[in-house]
Image (cartoon, rainbow, N blue to C red):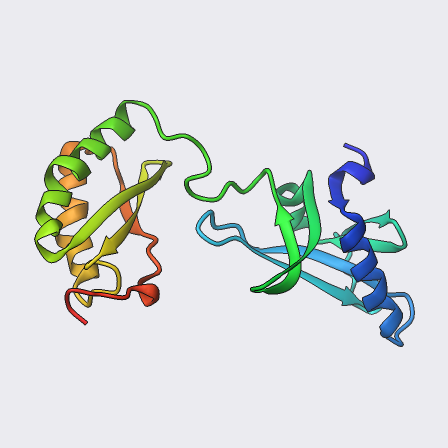
Length: 198
C-alpha cells in the first residue's frame, strides 16, 4: 500500500489541515492521526498538530498534499485505507473517518443460524414480555459471540433497563444460544422520551 493509499485525505480535509498549520506560529508542524478507541460501538479518533519534539521513535510518517502525517505504531494497522474528510453540517463541523478496519455495529447484513436463534428469542420471548411496558428490543449485531441490542419505547431511558438486560434478556438469549458470551445494550437511553420507569 502506497503512502497515498494508506490514509486518504479529501480536498476539503487537506484544505482545513493546511489552514490550521498556517494559523499556528510553531515551526515544523505535522499532523498526528491516531485511533483512541477502536470500539465498533463508537470508534474514536484524534488528529492534532505536533511539533518535532513530540514525535516518537516508532512513529510512521509520510507526506500528504501540503503537510506531513505522523501515525503511532499502535494505530497504523487500524488506519490503513482510511478516508478522512472535513464535513460541515447542522450538527457541527469536523473530520469524518471512513475506516474499513472498524465496522460500526449493524453495518453488515445479519444472517446465519446463530443470528436466527437470537432473533427468534427476541421476537418470541423477549418482545412479548417487554411489550406490557410499551417496550421493544431490537437486534443490532452479533460479533465474536457477543450480541448487541437496542431497547426502544418504554425501555429507552427506563430506570430498570439494566435489570431487564441482565436478569431477563441476557439469560433468555444464553439459554437458547449457550455460545453467546455476553449481551450488550447499545441504546442511547438519554434520548428516551417516554420511559416506563423514569
